[in-house]
Amino acid sequence: MKLQDDIRLDRFPLSVQSFEDLRKRGYYYVDKTQYIYSLVNVGKSYFLARPRRFGKSLFCNTLRAYFEGKKDLFEGLKIYELEKDWIHYPILYFDFVSGNYAAGSLTLVDKIKVTLRKYEEENSIQFDESILSSARNSEPNNVGRELSFRLEFDLEAVFKKTGLQTVILVDEYDNPLIKSADLATDKEIYRGFFSVLKSADKYIRFAFLTGVTKFAKTSIFSGTNQPQDISIDGNFSGICGITHQELTDYFSSNIQAFAIKEGVSADEMLSLLTKWYDCYLFHEDGVKVFNPVSLFNALQNKDFQNYWYSTGTPTILMQRIKNSYFDIKTLKSDVEYSKDRLKDYKDDEFRTDIVPLLYYTGYLTIKEYVKEERLYILGFPDYEVEMSFFNSLADEFYGPPESPNGFDYSKFLADFRRGDVESVIERLKALYCSIPYATDKNAKLLERDFQNVIYLVFSILGEFIVSEPHFSKGRADSILINKNYVYIFEFKIDQDAQTAINQINVKNYAGRFKMDGKKIIKVGVSFSSKEKNITEWIAEEG
Image 1: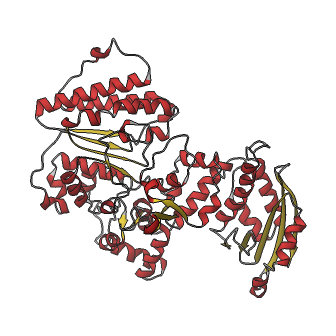
Image 2 (image 1 turned 45 degrees about the vertical axis):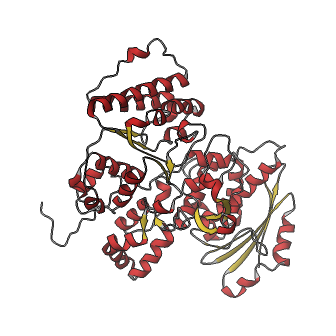
Image 3 (image 1 turned 90 degrees about the vertical axis):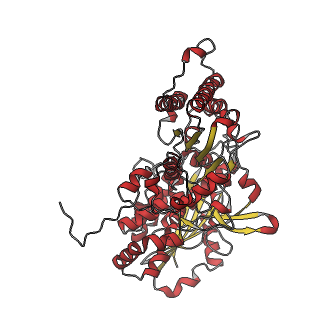
């Protein structure tokens, strides 16, 4: 069927990881090949940490096509004129994006073995597994050593056969560790296997590893001869993601089409896209970038949605927050963190420091740099990510909306529209009942859980109703404003509800809303640390 002349196909590379497929089928491609030329001509081994869905897999696949010498795929791109040789090197490509690693370490071992077999077949070499039969056992460190022996054998055999070193690409190396059911065992496997990156260096032309963060106690990031970490490097701050310049250079027609649909100017549309999907910064002197998946979805659908939330959130992050003393209210304002500590951060299961993990998973980004103190000021990158964080955390604490005790904001919204404070309080009580509280001895964790319920609920509702800043000096704990009502909440732990109402009245929190023409409802709420729930509340109009 022939398309009409006025029909234009906007081919955004959503879920397309193959560079060859992308180029041959005419998908949009934002040219990042200048980074490839810089990487391969300056160094040899690199590690890049970026949040999920940020284009790491496509960049790895682009590297693969480059090292396979597929010059025709790069015609019109920056590297096409820069590169003169276009040599086809042997490629060893580890794709750890897929796989049910929570099922056990066998998945990780099988994934490595399958990749090695494919590499052997492509280069017409054969590894005799009987070599290791006498030493083989089920101990994880021995499994890792066995795999590393095989890898080193293969690299040497290919080099002797072809005279060429091998290019090693490892996409999302940490995914098996993040999802691991036995992290200690899988780390042992990695420790043995990836030690070859150092011992077999003479057989390796180039190595590039990606992930969300570096893990401690793995051979990749310990000792000498580690991969160069370009995660916080101003020269590579734009290696993934879409810069403002790239957005206007490549997608001006899409911006204009979206603007027409929304009834705004192109400049206003740029401002809206910036509010929703912009402001990632990976070095204080670098360029700010948009999250590519969220941006492409918005331009393709011509609709502002929370695309980040729908793509899934790292389970490790939400579980770590749930099991820690981390006060999520601190994230409503920006937080300080040492640049050196952030750059050198390596995660493990015993760490209690949540801030760097929030940064590497994409929930915080660099807002400011205090040069004299070498301090980063970190905060939410944009509106979409902030709401994704609160929704994901609510799911972790209380379950998704469809679950029996899950947090369903739509029901809260309906109550607030009707002015039904009693139903709001009953829903809050139900959320408290769903929390697996800490023991009575752990008062700090108990208070945190109480505050988190309130903070999460009102932060998420603030996406749909005007929400005043929470927990700040001189204001009520929470204020929500809709078409007909102004709700002023004050919460107290082990104090009566009348004390909360008195504070609202004495400090005249309602004063600034008297002329708005809306009905003002003041709500004092008392939470009992003994009962671990709301035990008293008072509402009065005012």
